[in-house]
Figure (spheres, rainbow, N blue to C red):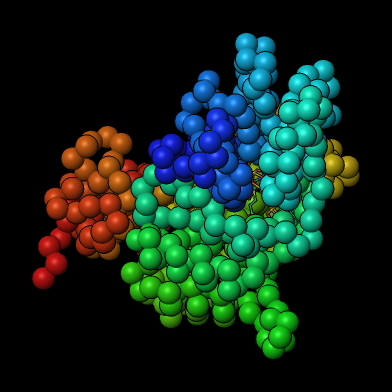
Length: 464
Ligand code: SAH
Ligand code: SF4
Ligand code: F3S
């Protein structure tokens, strides 16, 4: 999926310099962390006199914030890049940059057209973008793909691009040290590092002052968040961080993503249970239901210990929903392994899942050591079976909601009808309901009257 940053040009007005202000267009691919990175990029660029434009045809500089997680994601970005390179023929002054997770591997992928990309910047070099653009103005390709052990952009206030003004994202760490054998992230984003908690609290306090009602703390593995205060020697872990974030405003909901099953602790589960405004939802990617495959993936947990964590979450946090990520057709996966994934899905009773076909990524341990030997049509069939099963599980989970009342945070107009709003319950289910006198940003008690596999349908219950 790609997103353009949507905004009002005035909102991002740069300091008046008297010179023509250069227009920047940013297009973002990939995960929420990349989305949040684009907000950091816009902040850096705005401080250097750029204004944003929603129209690439109008832009002086186009930056594509790319994703490398699967081959499809890369293909989509490369197609779009070719389109922008064509644009340069029509407008020779235009500068095109590739930033984010594809930056490091780009030259290899663009053997022929690589030199036509003006700027290549990895996820840790966004502070240098203005100088890289200047360098590119001189006619050479400007490249910085160095990864850092310290950069967290802690002092940069991201320019919020979310349209609704209700929910927002705050990155609390960068990089990843887990080296799951299939995954490029440790290579594209480097070593894991946690962000100074005081800068996290300040950012969340500012969001609360601006009227935001929901904040999602982001990291590839939030459970390993850790910060040691140099002056006192005191340590804060993720449970400590989220508990302090939750105390910023009782009117602000707190979510987080992603938890790694190998180290989601009871302490964190109890912390969630203790705070009403920490949402009753955990995204706990399982990837496979077969312990043998999990070992090959280097995930650090077994089928049994994963299910034990799901049960602990449901026991400690009543009403907690659990969602997951699943990869179909990993190296050497047999029908029996696949079957174990399906039975684990039933046992865990996932409320929602992101499901993918395995895609071999260059440079990963799996690419080096494990043949990608499940045939394409077998991967497709297994993925379809997984999707079909999850649709059933989601419908069953939604059916149980009928007649219950949930507090929903209204986020905006429903896509289907201008007279309806949509929002989410604490356990992360999307509900649509007639607008009444509710506005985006309001909490409303919604009685669930119907459902589809993806959505709850409800009506407002008047508060007594
Ligand atoms: N840090 C998170 C998510 C990382 S990427 C975590 O550890 O869970 C999001 C999801 O993409 C992963 O959970 C995985 O399901 C999927 N994914 C990652 N690499 C992949 C690959 N090579 N092929 C297919 N899916 C992949
Ligand atoms: Fe990739 Fe694993 Fe890190 Fe998630 S935990 S980003 S899947 S290496
Ligand atoms: Fe995110 Fe894609 Fe990078 S999922 S971390 S943008 S490889």
